[in-house]
Structure formats: C-alpha cells, structure tokens
Length: 277
Ligand code: C2E
Ligand code: CA
Ligand code: CA
Ligand code: CA
Image 1 (cartoon, rainbow, N blue to C red):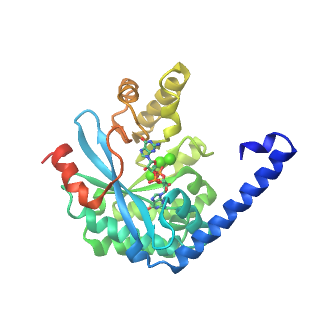
Image 2 (image 1 turned 135 degrees about the vertical axis):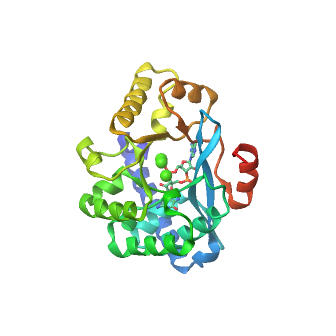
C-alpha cells in the first residue's frame, strides 16, 4: 500500500495488491459460507489483569477459525469479511455460546468479556438472539462485559445506543473498545450506557520515549475517572510499559506481557497460577 505515493510503477503495484486483497477476501467469504462454523470456530481467552492485586479481572473471548482448506485464518481477516458479507449473525451466536459455556467453569469473580460487532448491536433481532443465548447459558449476566468499538457505535448511533441499553437492562456491562481510534465525541460517549473504556494499543506504543504520549494516556485515564468509567489499557507488552502506565494511574491492563490469548484447555492452569484459588 505504501507504494501509492511514489512513482507511476508504484501506483500499478498498489492496484495489483489491492486486487489481490479483494480476491483473498472473496475467498474467505466463500470458505466462511461453506464452513461448519460449529466445528471450525473456537475461542481463545486473554486475561485482563488487575495489576494492584495481580488477579485476573476478566478474560476476553477472541474468535479463532481453523478452516479445513485455508488453515487458521486471523480474526483481523475473517471478522471484517464476515461483517461485509452479512455473516456476523451466524458467527456471533456460535462464538457466544462457546464462550459462555467455557466461562461457566471459571472462578466466580472472573468476568467474561465478549466482542460484538456493529451488526450485532444495531439489529434488534441480533440483540434478542444475544439476550436469549445469555439466558439459556446460565452464566450470570452481571459477570458479562460486551465490548463494542467506537467506530461501530458511530456508524448508527441511535440503533447502537438502543442495542446497548437492552444489554445493560439484562445486567451486563458495556466496554468501549479501541478508544481513541475512532471519531466519537465526548457528548456521544456520554449518551451511551458505558461502564468501561479500553484504551487502544496504539497509545501504549507512544509511551516509552515520549512525554507527550504519556500525557495523552494520563488524560484518558483522568477522563475515565471523572466520568466514572473503568479503564483498561490493551497491548501492554513490556515491564517498562506496565510501570509507566501504573504511574499514570492505570490499574487494569491486558497484553502479551501478562499473557497471550490461551485456548480454553489452558485456562484452568492459568487460574491456578494467577487466580485467587
Ligand atoms: P480487539 O478486540 O482489539 O482485540 C485485541 C487484539 O490484539 C487481539 O487480536 C489480541 O490477540 C491482540 N493483542 C492482545 N495483546 C496484544 C499485545 O500485547 N500486542 C499485540 N501486538 N497484540 C495484542 P486478535 O485475536 O487477532 O483479534 C483481532 C480483532 O478481531 C479484535 O481486536 C476484534 O476486533 C476482532 N475480534 C476477535 N474476536 C472477535 C469476536 O468474537 N467478535 C467480534 N465481533 N470481533 C472479534
Ligand atoms: Ca476487544
Ligand atoms: Ca481492542
Ligand atoms: Ca485494537
């Protein structure tokens, strides 16, 4: 993509790459349509850690897809493809059922955090589906967080707010994901039933050598405190980043420094090492 601004040859290269990307995406959609989603989709879990206590505050469910012909496909690829082709309404119920079933085995003070896309929150039918799946699972809604991105919410603000209000009414909490990467205004943020803000990884990358970067994070943390939101910083990869963030007043963190996403079979072991029990 970077070839774009160079010379004429660069423009041609850009066009060719772009075509390949489109071709691959249609491949992914085809494979998704043909897939046995119940068998091929699985869920990995990445802890959100309370650094004051060292305890696991929540586990975020992250979708994984192992396709018989394509092999493992990244969610950064197949989720956008599923969104564009209208397939999230088929993926989300499968993923949510699996995540809730897994979370029923976790210690009672660990929350489940589950990502919803714009299509999940803006369609009343999808929201009703989510509510039914949560009720059927037996998992207490009070231990459930739904993550929605700023961008998703801004696509159709009124519908999104209604959807989020329905999830809140169930007893779940709402997190605004990838905060700082979209275009939501503070007045919009205040109109949503939010409990928590997840500060995007891009802010962590700015931290180490850059006083201005620290100031930005500090400002977001203060904003959360003033608006009475919890705050999670994602993408923490080093001890140094963790230390700086703690200085800035962050308490909840997530990232490779603490743990990569782990398969369900490894979660019990994670709790014995990092949990209260
Ligand atoms: P996200 O919700 O922002 O999730 C964080 C992503 O960053 C995950 O990538 C995670 O593995 C990765 N990550 C976590 N810690 C670190 C770190 O320290 N360094 C770096 N470099 N990366 C880190 P993943 O699992 O590939 O997911 C990508 C995106 O796909 C997610 O971003 C989310 O937007 C979407 N996604 C994943 N699962 C689901 C799902 O079940 N439903 C929906 N709607 N979207 C999902
Ligand atoms: Ca997320
Ligand atoms: Ca995120
Ligand atoms: Ca992100």
